[in-house]
Image 1 (spheres, helix red, strand yellow):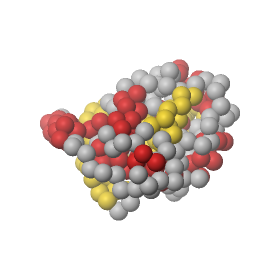
Image 2 (cartoon, helix red, strand yellow):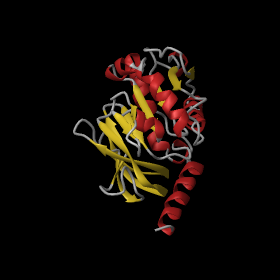
Image 3 (cartoon, helix red, strand yellow):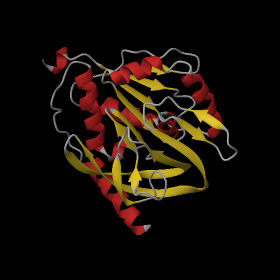
Image 4 (tube, one colour):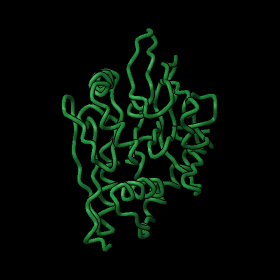
Length: 249
């Protein structure tokens, strides 16, 4: 099948008005550009408070937000998440960053004991910590048998602990990760991925972006080897992030 015959990748951007505190639209822009540079297309549906979630998308995205906005989203999402759960079970890609990562778990327990519901796509639970975990992060990530370095920035008070139903996204070289104690960051179950790394995540990590896009294309019924791109600028930004992380430790 030629690129001209390939249907667009359908992306559902969940709560773009509430969960966009860490330049999350930058991740959407990366998906769009990396497809467009290859003669492919991205079709974006934005879903907000009260809107139904489509079950026929190839890629779903949840970003990060302020505590108040995240609580509003959690309550809304808990009532309408079944199409998202079904899409994930059918092989669609789900990416949650920071607050979105926490919402993909079972629940978030606040310092006062209050509970913010999650949707259980990832077998994990988050509790509020007494301090924030902040700084540059470097990970070793293995997906589909290939290992690469992933970089980003974390700024979160949550302490996330994984259950047996998911595995860490990566092992820490630098940074605090999920909880500052176990040496792990993020979580993966099938094609559902959660991480605390933002800034945004994907511009400095083209390998990860292409891995997710490859999964989305496969879900769309168009499995293909993505043509390589000129990623010199992306690799330079990645190298700067690694150096900065080393300097801060």
